Image (cartoon, rainbow, N blue to C red; front, side):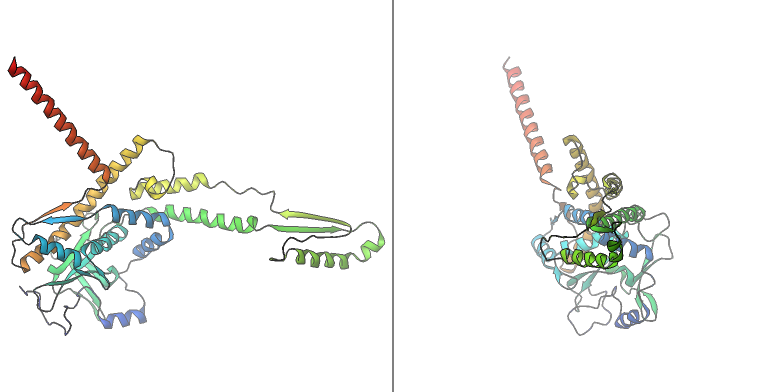
Length: 385
């Protein structure tokens, strides 16, 4: 059962093979980030943090995918459920749902997700689950185009992981002949760039126009004394105006002698209407992410029928993500059952995505029961005749 054991460390958990060694970590501080951390992935990571709608949509997808249970006809169901609920994940998490949440987020943002099953020193128990960082790894095509070799970065270069059977790997819609998957955010940098440029311009305009500035103009009369002392009076007006406009001084009157004109700078300018272009950009982002607008707090005009159709489309998207995650769950559960002497015969039962599904199923069962009762009553009347 301990077929992955090589040289166990002194601690109670095997070394994580998809994590970089200490020599590579120290080298990365000196020589910068890993060259395998592509600029495209850095852009997607920044895009998720910069545009709140994208981050909110990814979080919604993580939660809406829902949980699952495992049914084992040959025993071990309760023990397996306890393991899935209590297994250590990364440094400070527990439960397979925490692992799958990070795994799915990595899959959506970067198009590729890598995790690892970490055994204990004895090789008879799964000690933890680990979400690997893509910048610490390099994915290569093996001898066969159907094989993917996962290599971990070390100080001297990269080398394949010694136990690939413990590594979990998924790719989202990879292009033909490619190892890496396609990010859900592909195509959004251009649209998001326009959106952020609009927001930045709105901020600049409000900084210029919203923070009111005044132009105070003093026009001396044709009198010779006014013209002689125009410079001194202009300085006095400026000092009094500055005193009156000091923040925190409260409401203050400004008293001046002569022809003094006060005008708001920029009051005649009109700020461009940003509602339509912002909505157009958000529509493109929401269409790419596949999340109904009302789930993201976007109060666009929609009908009840349209909302139902959008929810049905979202359900199909979530079921597709479940199909990608299911092989990962199967590998974890199969290994745990074999390590504990059970046959790896089980079934993954996903929770219904929302309560509306439960209501529809209950309504369908009620309608079928009513139809069966009516048919039975009609059949009894025909037999009576």
